[in-house]
Structures are given as structure tokens and as C-alpha cells.
Image 1 (cartoon, each protein chain N blue to C red):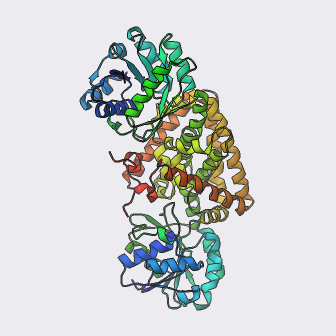
Image 2: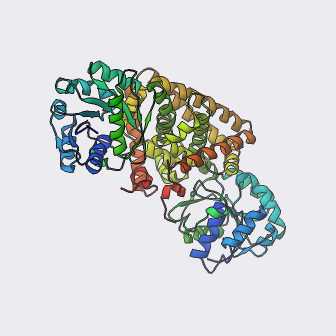
Image 3: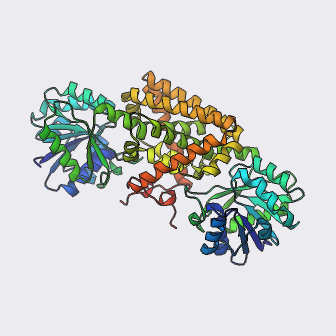
Length: 301
Length: 301
């Protein structure tokens, strides 16, 4: 691998974890970093998330071989414009955003002539900020790369090798297909979780105290997701609008059908769906994408 | 506590855990049990879930002080009718079902003249069957009792003491209010989880393999809930229909508003909701109703 210097722009959960993963898995690689928030820069330096924290994006990328933008997808274009003046011509530019068509467009507009390969490591927690990062975040997780038609094969191979060195398994995908798949597996689940947590807190006849008290019946799983970073998720929904609205349309149709089944006392329709959904869970456990302990190991038994 | 003999009808996750919890926390209490499925009876005897497994509900309750029905809420009335002939007059009858108005009605119809106090320990996992039980299931969990207007205070105190001895914290609630609170905190979250898992597996442009592969982005949390026992949950929705439809109506209204915000690019509306929902998560962690480790401790870091 010829990547020797990596610049990380944005030092929150993803950027911070990336810096720590590089230090652990690629100790020969030099990392630099920048965050638009000076408090985050100070904390990132204290925590040693990257080798050197700079006070401007331009300074951070001066001699980078690889620049990875770890900012909310709505902030990608401005972040790229800020570092453009001192971006080496040979540097490969990538990101970790959750929507890929919009990022490809934003980065192409800001950095004409540069090699850009959008990427999305499918990993994260509900925590955010520089203190939330940890080196193993990407281990045994998928990292989806969405190259364009004119992406040099060598650059693609370099970026894939980089992510694999950090413990991820790399997958190549069309940007539009990525956005649809992630709308299903990530964006809509987050939207639904945010919605039901909001609905529950707005009811007049059930107090918020009661909602919290009896959350172990299922609700608490949704609150975990609904505690994710608001700025990041606002940007995801605004930037993956079409795919999100498409999947959301399917979901609301399906929900209406179940609502009708409940109203009509159609137990068979409910039972059939509830049986079918078990198989998917089984496959997720088998493929190592989740913890098989009941209740996520919340209790030790 | 004057309860010396407890009969458990239904030996799945809840009934089995109840038997194990009694053996651990109330060793002086004798437990008997019955399950309508002979394979479950055999397994329950092998596992020692209760002191003695009987081949009929009537035999299991012959000299019980307390009978606890641990069957799906739709099976309560028949289970109660089956044991009625040999139910001692002094025996207190209770259950662990997730809807309380329907259970109160079913048990009153099947067991006229008996003291009935419906109960709902708010605890469970996505696993089901006799092998899923464990003694600490009820520890530090709420158990809601929904007595009627004519319930003797002494019987209520006995049942409360029994659940407290098993590690639960008891709360008294009106049956109708219980059904509304649990519709929010448990039933609707399950319905939504079942729906989105079904929607995801029905899409033409995204394969089931992709859904499974990239489930770590949020979807997998829903699959855990959507792996819960189909019979139990079919019965919950059919038996708590009104409260479920009411809360579902609110949820779909709220979801439509978010859909519109996404369509119109109204980032502020999204950001406001996403910020508000974080506070609820914080309270749930503070009150010990969930695990604060990011990602539920799925990874060790």
C-alpha cells in the first residue's frame, strides 16, 4: 500500500475512530486531522485521535496521500472547498457519509480534477463526538465503496486495501444502489425510531415518566437509535430524499395492511408476517452481524 | 407471605423463568406446572423448571394457593376453563399477559367467584419456549398489577409480595391505562419492527442478502424484536386492539409530518425532533432501564 499520510477532516465518532484504528492497525501511516469546532480539535489532540491536529483543513491536507471527510453529508461540499487550495494533486479523496450519490456530486463540484471515491463504512453507535471513538469500530464491518465509471482501478485497490487493513470487509456498489439499500437497512429504521420516540413523548394520557419506566417492553431499543447525532441524521434524510421516500412509501403501505388486519381481527395475516420475520433474524445472527445473546447481553445469565 | 404452592400454566419463556425464579428466590414454595404441548412438558421436567410437571392443568392446580397463567392472551380463557374443575376456592388466580382488560374479562368469565388479579411483568426477550427461561428475568423489572374494584386488599398485598420476592418492583394500575401505556412502550414498537422487517424482505430492488449484510446500520435492532413469539404477539394485537389502533393513528400522523418535512427539505423540523428524542434516551439510562454501553455492549471496547 502506498498510502503513507492520511488526513481526517471531522474528528467525531467516525473520524476519531478512524484515527485510532490507523494508529493501531497501520502504525507506519502518519495521520493528521482537523475539525471545524475548536473544542473538538482540543479534545482530539488530548485524546491523541490523530498524529497532529491542525487549525485549518488546508494545513491538515498539505502532504496527504489520502483525505477522508468525516463530516455530516450536508457539510461535505464546504469542507472540501475549504481544503481544496492545498490538496496535493495526487491525493485520493474519500469520505464516510451515509448517502453516496449526494456526496459524489458535492465532492466532484468542490474538487474538480481530483480522484474521488466515496465510501461508507457501515458501522457506528448512538454516541457522537471525539470521546466516542474507538479503534475497533470498523472490525468485521462492511465498508462500501462507490467508485465512478472513470475511477482508476489502482486508486480503488489502494482505498480497498486501506479499509481492509483497518479490519473492514470491502464491497463495491453503484451509488444509487447503495442509497436504496441503506435507506432500507439504516435510514428508515432511524426515521421510524425517531418518530415513535417523539409520538410517545407527545401523548396526553401517558406521561413521559411512564414511557421511560416501562420501556423494557420494546421501546428502549428504539430510543437507542433515536439518540443518534441529530445533525448527521438531518443531513442523511435531506441528502437521500428519493430513496428514503420510496422505502417509506412501502413501509406505510405495509403498516396500513397490518392496521386493517388488527381492526378486522385477522389473526392469520398477523401470524404469517410474524413468523416470516423470524427467519431474517436467524440469518443476521448466522452471518455474525449481531449478538445472539437474548436481550443483547443486557443481563448476564 | 402465605403462598406456599404455586401452579404455573404454560411453561415457555415466562412460565419457565417464573418457575426458576421461585426455586431460587422462594425455595420454601412448592411449584407445579402444566403446558398444553407435551413436548414442552417433557422438556420442562428435564430442565426442572417447576417442582412437578403434571399432564393436565386440573391436576397441576389441585392444591395451589396461587395459579399463574403464562399462556398467550388469546388462550387465557380456555386455559382457565380447563383448570376450573379442580381449582381450590381459596386460590388466587393471576397471569403474565401483555394486555390486561381482555385477560380480566376472560378470566372472570371462566372462573366466576374466584379472586383474580391480572398482572404483567414488563420483562422478556425475543427468545421463546422452555429452554429460554432464566431465573433473573424479573429482577429489577416492573410488574404491573391491575386489580378490580372488588379485589380484596389482602390478596393484592400477597401477590405484590410474591413478585417483590422474585426481584420485581410492583406497580398498581387501572387495566385500561395499562393497555394504553403498554401499547406505546411495547405493542406499537413490536408492530413497527415486524412491519419494517417484512417491508425490507419484500423489496424487489434490494435482495434479502443485502438487507442482512448491511443490517448493522440500524435494521438489526428491529429484527431482534421482530423475532419474538408470533402466537403471543398475534394475540396481543387482537386483544389490545383499541389502544393499539389509537397509538398507531398518532404514530402514522407523526410519520406523515416527517415525510412531508423530508419532501420539502425542512431540515429544522427534522433537527428539532432528533434533538428532543435524545433526552428520553438519557432518562431511560439514568433510571436503569437499559444498558448505557454503546451498541448494547455488542463489541467490547
